[in-house]
Length: 129
Image 1: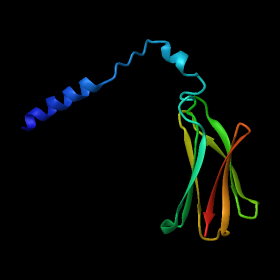
Image 2 (image 1 turned 60 degrees about the horizontal axis):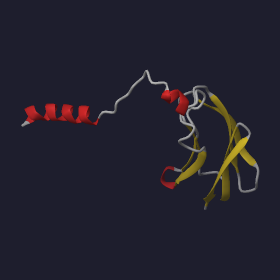
Image 3 (image 1 turned 90 degrees about the horizontal axis):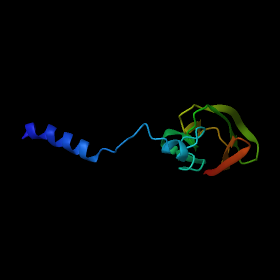
Image 4 (image 1 turned 90 degrees about the vertical axis):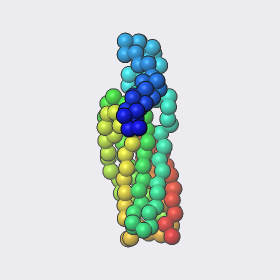
């Protein structure tokens, strides 16, 4: 029975494989050289609170590019003050960055996580209770 497994898996792989033509210039027309998948996603931010791990994890997703992108990440506390601001690099070929903070020691209330990319701001809010 096992001797039929390998040929069956090989057949499935070959039959479901896509035809990839690397000489076709159509892909250059569909995708910008600067942004690899610009038409696929819109930049976004989201935060997740993991109380059992005492962590707040925030993620920024953007389009993959062929160049490094510099962004500014800001944590804004409930009083409206910037608790932390840092410059980060989204490496070429990558589409996301993560930043995290510990819950202990943070003010309770509504926090904001803001990312500034090319003078555009992306903001998400979360509540610490």
